[in-house]
Image 1 (cartoon, rainbow, N blue to C red):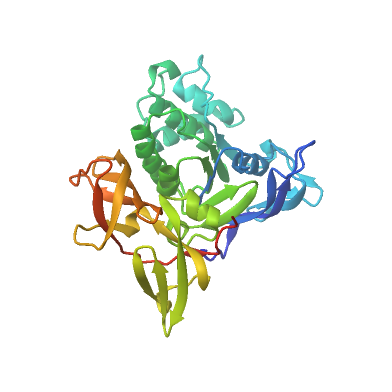
Image 2: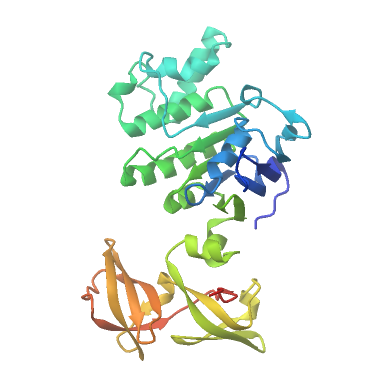
Length: 361
């Protein structure tokens, strides 16, 4: 996990309970963001990520723990600052633009206490920041979905919030536009040096946006880390299953000098212990084999049958079945177009050995 020296957002042992529910919606969650960092919360529906975002915004009262923003406690120890006192900007799934106001008027809505000349200057600044310099007089119905999203972002940034919260901001857009806007949004917020916390269900979106990403499950924060470590060094079995494509296979792990030696359905794997900073389960275990760990090789001794395939442009995602009954997944270049039912040779190329205790049957 990245070292946090100067914490701008500090969520500590946070709990949120809803009346009538036995389990906490947010259960002992701690996370931090430095000034200018972008954090992303990801997880399945109902995992608590939006509730956590709403608690940071002041829209949900917490049951325990604390939330500090820029060294000031906004929730906890008998303190609950209302949303309007937290200097937070928010962008939701529904951009909630006022249809009777033009773009400039929408953006200026939160600046009503500013002098008129300062309002105009600020509106022009944020329009330029989001790339809509010549759109101030247009109305929402005249804009594309991507442009409406930019207006909503500009409106949230206009009052110069100390923290920006975004809840599924791209969910109403098509997939190609979402990925492009995610990269653009990251650039915009980095230029503005804005600290931000996002909620999304889309892994590619999370990877495109986040300096640090949190995976949530059943109210708990499973791991708060950068994308590389989430993928290659998952802290829990749930993170390993949730991020990327992969399966668990039975294995036996032992140490030989400075090496980890793993016996798998695809043969023996070795990894230098100096390159492995994770805690490994020795003996009988389950090894994580991701789709990019499995290489199609016609000369390989191990053969697998293709039982499913998904075309993804530059590659196929094959689901494979070994003679033992073990299922694997593999990314294969799309010019290797094999038929379902065909047997192909495969071998493992695993750079990072990730094992967990065997799952309870």
